[in-house]
Image 1 (cartoon, one colour):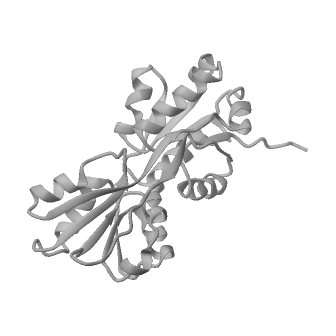
Image 2 (image 1 turned 30 degrees about the vertical axis):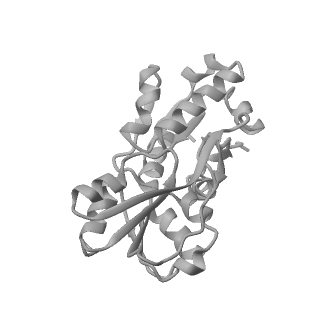
Length: 243
C-alpha cells in the first residue's frame, strides 16, 4: 500500500480570506497550513447613508470592520472579487456588484454603472494597493477613502508553518507585496532565512511578487489578480513537483 503525502501549502492571508484559500487548497489535494502574516485592528467610525450614492470595497476586512451595516444596507456596493462581494452580501448589503481584478478594474466597473453626479465612498484599510478614490476622481467622480481598519505584523508563524519550512518543496500563497514582506520578516525572525530558497511562492500579481523577486526567490505569478487564477497557478505548481 502506497501512502500519499500531501504537499504543504502555507496560506499567508488574513481572515476572512484565509478560510476561502484553505478550501481552495484542499480541493487541489494539497495540505493547507494557515499562517496569517498580519493581524487586523478594526476602528471603523459610525457611518450614515446620507450623501453616499455608492460604497466601494477592495477588501473583505473592510466589510467585516463595519459596525452599522443596517444603516447602509440599501446603498449600492461595488466590490473587488468574489470573496469581498460574498462578505458584503453576508454582512447584509442588498445591492452588491462584483468586479474581477484589482482597484483599477473596479474603478472602470463603477464608472460604467454610476452617475458622475454621485458620491462614492471607498471603505478600506490603512495600507492598500492602488488609489481607487484617485482613479475615480480622474474619471470625474466625487470619491473619498475612509480607513476602517489597519493591519500589524503577526506575532509569529504558526506551528504548522514552522514545521512546513523544513519540508522540501513547500509552497506559499502570497496575496500582496506587503504580505510577502511580512512573510519574509517572520521567517527571518524564526532564524530560518536559509529555508527561503527551498520554498516555492505562488503570487496573486506581479506587484505581490516584487519583494520575492528582489530576494532572488522563485515566484510564480497568476495571470489574473483573482483567487481563481491564483489557485489555477498553484495547481500547475503542484503538478510540476508532484502532489
